[in-house]
Image (spheres, rainbow, N blue to C red):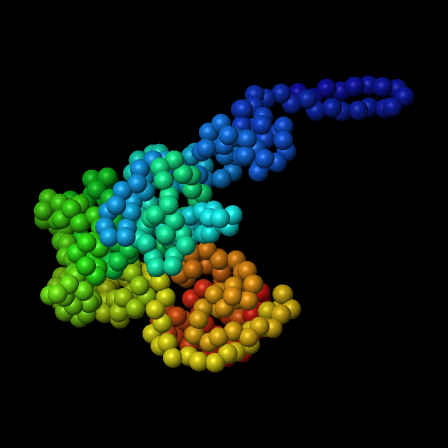
Length: 369
């Protein structure tokens, strides 16, 4: 509503009178003019209330395999669910410091998701989630990302997983089951773990394979007494119509690199590596990295990720997943040679973008950081 006030001594003044019904959340935000302060007071009332932050509360915690737990999480209204197979940034405060890690979540229903995490030796976040996190704890989440999704699937679907690489595969299979499409989609799931106790969701996978003739499931144990073979060409021979298939692979970088080489004839191939295991690990010596924006020159060791090397020198670049998926750490390389820690590829070309979490310096570098 617009009110015009006429005054001969001061001229014409216009006042805007806007009347609207405000929610308690908006009223509180307006009263304190500070989102952080608003969040602080809102969470005194309800730990999941926030004006801008995706939050989730742990409502159930269960052991699903050796050193692996599944957390059932109730989400707030701001939480944006991922497509099955995508990843979510998870932000956790431990001893006053915020850590960001990436996990593939499984959508359960409108309000709940599952986060399955495997304990990693010396892993700060995985240790906290597996050993310290309790029912009632609240986690923060970023926006999901990732290209390994069901909308890219051509028939048949081949899923290759090693270790905790099973989590995005489980998410996609659960999505198909919830949509009642599992019985119609030809699926071949191959899953590698070290020991029998390391296999997660085993009963679920076996039940699907028994219930649906189109679903095939195999699990391989690589460190039992009668050890199974790691991924090789013999496994490729067990898959029918590979030239018509969509192949998804997730696991350590060495596993993913092997899968990429074996399944080059697939109609569509998509992979994600969750850890770095360089194909060549004999780099020695130091090189200099010049940071153009920071006006710094730092000596770093060859063979380790640029991100890690910079963090060790108290430089804090932006990063997200730390495994080359989210693109948050991408920066411009002005000159110098780098090596991709996922596949060993060397890049000597100037003026191109690199992901500093999965590249090491092979020569003196100049990068825009």
